Image 1 (cartoon, rainbow over the protein chains, first blue to last red):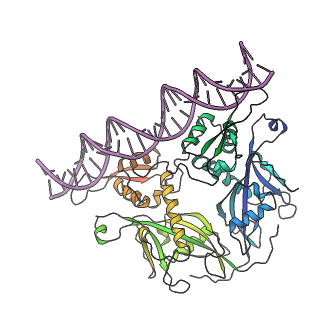
Image 2: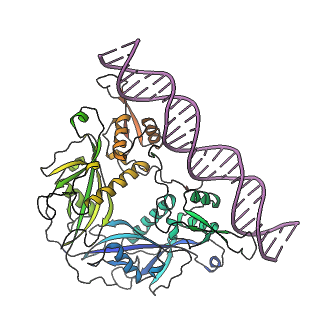
Image 3: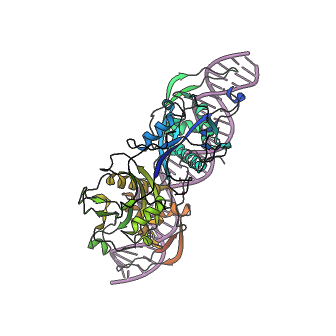
Length: 241
Length: 241
DNA sequence: ACAAAAGTGTTTAACCTACACCCATGT
DNA sequence: ACATGGGTGTAGGTTAAACACTTTTGT
């Protein structure tokens, strides 16, 4: 094993795709229209690729692991107390993924912010709906696509939706979250039953007051866990018994 | 963003858990007994942790990405032409995961070798059944456990078994592979039906000759793909239609 | 004939989707 | 009363686990 060969300078960076389900115009904010899945991006003020939009992130320090680094970098862009979930995704290590030197190896993360949070953002930072991404820096567009795919997959077999939801919510709110994040329609009834069977949801017993045009008051629910849990481990080939 | 802060020396290494389903004693080799899932390890001849067993791997070079690096490091331990699959897993970045300096960040990989291959190994290298792992170096035991879990999960919803199987095989051979890799019994009949429905398997039309005690000759099968494919994407919450 | 190994068919159960119908509230 | 939104019941389909039964071969 040749381990001590000389090498040029290499930076290891954490990049996080932070998602939130958000409303994107006045009509929607008033309660009409559908919310959309959005990703947090900041616009580069300097070369290279000035003007393009980047994922929050930056270089790993000597005394922190990658998760701690991702959290620290995010703190510059968004109130990290609002961050309800953070998990590691893939590593991007192509020597030419960004112009160098230094070479930059990116460990990517998926971050989630609940529907109700509306954190302060710096001047250069904005939420972008994933359906209308701006010109992205380097390979950051690929990272966002990958993170979206992982999120959608995990919505199907884990309780990861807790990261996108408020503490308490009605089933129709939860439906909107799932529809926005998955990109297709979900039946409220079945969503409720699937999540209840898997013991992901728990009714609070309380109800929300109905909207301005009346309607039956909605029962409110909570997620039983606030940590990621696999809820439907085996699609097939279950262990016997 | 503080990107150019000074930092100590850091090595980025690739570590690969290479798995194979193997027979582990003479009786088993003769056709009796059950094969087991094994992982490729080499024994450290030098400090630190001399005598403990390590995953193959080593430092990333400037001109290669992590996958290329994993392949290159593996070439020192095993004939890489036998390697039927290689994919990235998680990154281990705790600053104290190995005694340093230099600090070592490990990107881990899952590698697979087919049942029939029996590559030459160097003196210090050996296959170990995962049920009886020796004293492992650093955090390598955790890496092996994690890789095993991922392999078992992917056997359920992807065609990843192609990496553990010979080019052509009978259903009972495939059953042994699944049993060894999953750690529990699988019904041959149902395995056949599940994989056929998903179009993962294709009958070759040929048959194997029966064993020394007779028996009906087994039909032979192939995997339709030799690349990883997700075959059962949605455990629930499928798109409408 | 008999044992061994492979393949087929059937029963049962779980789970999910779709959709029709019923309930609670405000105007 | 009726419009609006929430909740319940149910029928039908798909998947797969379990296991009994049949087929093909060698001795």
